[in-house]
Length: 293
Image 1 (cartoon, rainbow, N blue to C red):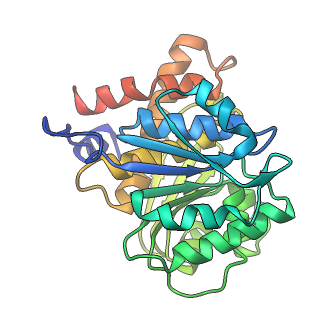
Image 2: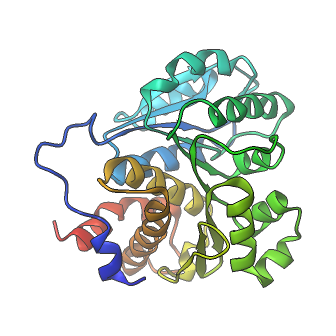
């Protein structure tokens, strides 16, 4: 799809839009040593149009997050040694109805305690309420493969790279790279999800084994730490804030916006010096080009 096609899926905001109608994203992310991933994802969701973003993170890191992003609300969760523990679900469960989309995974630890929390959380939201939007990225994808099979009531977008998708399918990452469309389609069917496969200079989007999209927008400078966290945040932000935005449309639009922001950042900083924060800063400019306002 080209720029005109993507622009047609991103209508301007209504003048009457307020922060609640623009959507509330809950970002479950971060651990000691990986707070940056959580911050990038949360910022990207805001920059992509979400009216409200709450970052649920280990309680030891909450004060640091408050200082870094004053526009984002924080929800401290029970943790130990900078990683979420199983008790975090008790805090989250009564609050899940407050959010329009859950983005989980960036910077989550895979320590035993966090894996237990993640499995319990995903099993809960899998059957929580019809239509709940969920974006899973990074470490959350490694948990997804271990969940019991069964059709989920949530609407799910998964954003793996080849190694993560390989774990989801029990394939090698080399096999995923050789057959990206087949792999993305199989994962989409297996998990009842829209799959966004991040693969070097191209992104493969699949809803099932018949419907595929290819995104080639972007540049080699975007192969940098945190770039995927920004993409996950853009996906959640567009999904909740844009009228008429389905899971498939969000999965198609987000990589294009991400790539366009990366191209704009490269014009300022060069390909070699590009970092994820530079992509994030250019998200509003990319949306302005697409929306014309």
